[in-house]
Image (cartoon, rainbow, N blue to C red; front, side, top):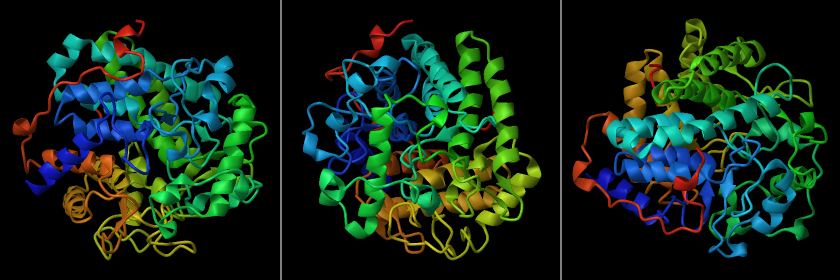
Length: 463
């Protein structure tokens, strides 16, 4: 009951009226993959609110199909978060690509988990969802999002999606990015102010050098009008296994959504098969027992072991021998599942750059462990999935729903009362059959936000 009430409190306190901030202080706007994970948990409290969460995000979609990684709330002061809207200048710099004029966003993207989230939210109350026309509204938006990735982000020409900024795969300062980032000249430190250090310990956050390189890449992308242009001009261009695994899972989900709304699911199933084959061909490393990132500018696989390389466990049609190898790697000395760690770390426990405190360089994250729990269960490792679920629930409560934790001790790091931690813990709790939430229903949403109303929009894979 403590977890249930705590998760509900976090999600209600971080609700803005149409969406949920990741945290009130550190992240005061709407983030793309955060909202997808938040909706997955929020559906247990209010399917209607979960739908609104996703619809609000999709209302900020660009004309070229991209879903931006941040949707800015104009009521938040510019100095509360950096890079702020006046840095990205989306409505002007992105105008040629259909950036919305009524709301400011960033110009980069995040992992495409949205179709999976929409399907799970629909399943929470299919009849009410159908009455509202939820899937009928989101389906064309999701299809356009996937088309953007397929048509504009296959920068390596091998059939996989590429990322052009370390913020895009969501694992911002992963050691996987050290070599690609070394080619980037950082922006001078006196040209920007890091608002994140006003809310978090410097030891938990990316370094100033990393941030200077993030700023340089984002500014260069903005100054090119956010055009992908085959990746020309970007010093950072990487194929990430986690991003592509989430796209495959979402293609399967979008096929089911298409069937539900009377559209053709075949293109999505075909794309999922092609992506799965390309993922294995381009990123699987049998010697490592893991999927690796490919540096398209440096010309090869990046020899760093990241939790992103385990995420293909969520791919339904992954070859069984590869799934078995991933489970062995997750359970071995590099990631410690079922052994010395409480939760799977974001980076190799034995790696040269492992740090249990610093952002994505070692701490355990709840969204990663939620995905791995599903992947383990999908591929038959039920006992390991059960143990990971139990550990995640314990860590969520003991850490105060922390942003991330020390993988060995589950000591809280980053900010507290983090929305996706609360949401995904709630989802794991309900999935375990440990608690019902009917008595904790929340009121219907009231459309009081500045953003366009979604009502004004035009018109069995283990998930």
